[in-house]
Length: 115
Image (tube, rainbow, N blue to C red; front, side):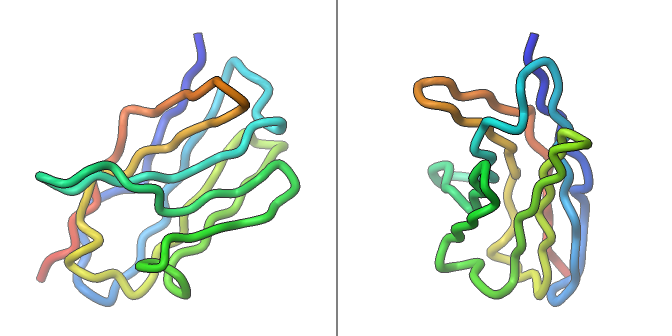
């Protein structure tokens, strides 16, 4: 059974940083595009960042210059480095693996930005 396990969420003050990790198992991680989504209360889930199998990255406009997505194929792990966090970044963050019509999701990790 495919597993995506996120970690690294928590409470942080505005302007602070967090690094999220997503450990993948039981599928061929290196051939999947990996994504981070987030969902705030009362809002739709939105794509935050994506990294292709070749390492190309894309970001939502709201996080460009503040968030960095990376992957380590040897460790089957994708990361999201978040800096200059704002209260509006508060959400549950989900790891996603995508290949053609296949989509796998993690259980999510809560990020709360508050003073």
